[in-house]
Length: 94
Image: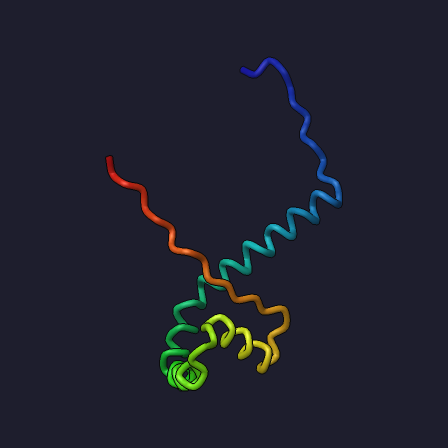
């Protein structure tokens, strides 16, 4: 048996807003994962990969990231940031 009693903290409006924002972010991530396969298949079946290769071949000195950012600007995606992370090296097995 517990000898002491704890009182539960009543959540304030600010606490609830923070919790709501975290839940919205988690929902966005879940939606991205849920529809990722569907979107990938649609892109593969479309002419997007061929068009991207044409653009890449015509602008050889331009990076893939710059091309994707330009495409985002042209189609109206606001605040699009494309980045490429470095490959993480695996640790050696000793």
